[in-house]
Length: 270
Image (cartoon, rainbow, N blue to C red; front, side):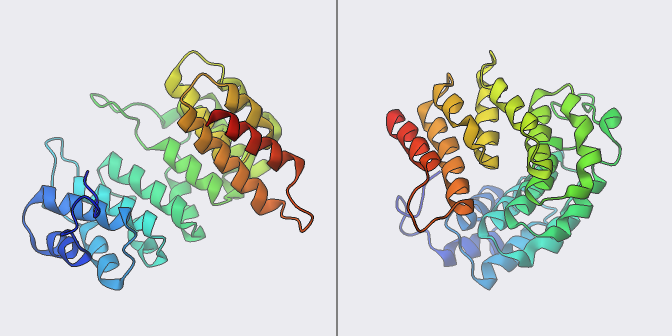
């Protein structure tokens, strides 16, 4: 997609006009993306996205709501909690990918009002967490839901999340391991992700790296640097670990040995 740098004529006013007034679905879709991408936080932009989150006109052939998906993503990126209640309501949307985008947005917003509605989506347990017939996805976006609950420190959800460590989809297992580490501080869950870095599937190695970066697991930094994956993704994961470590181990005496080691690993990947 082009950016405002590539297309200087595309302004906040133009994005709002397209999102609110045009009948062109692709123009509205792009406008929602643009508002999120460039963090347009004024009231009119938030209100336009909240309206788009309930849009019924933009439908895909399979019955999904593409505009709603982009609106949810944008609301998460804006970091504006005025959208929390509308996002929570959108967890009831029939579109799996809307629910996934909403869960990710609620994780980004960090509002604990989202915990109970997200927990509700897990109440069927792992027994009901199956694939939808004729679709490429599960009944619910379990990966996004579980990751959100971990970030939101939903300790009451531990008993619901723990069984997903044995789910038949490995990325859901990783999400559960990530959340269980965040909620219990049990290193065995983080070490499970470190072990996954040696797996045969590149996509799964990438996923494990991002999970380790998200939880700031310092002990996994060396393994990330040695993983068979793109250096660009390794740097993103290591940056997440470093930022988390600096946030929780700030000191007037300078950088810790762990911070210096992570920086050295990052330098070696450049």
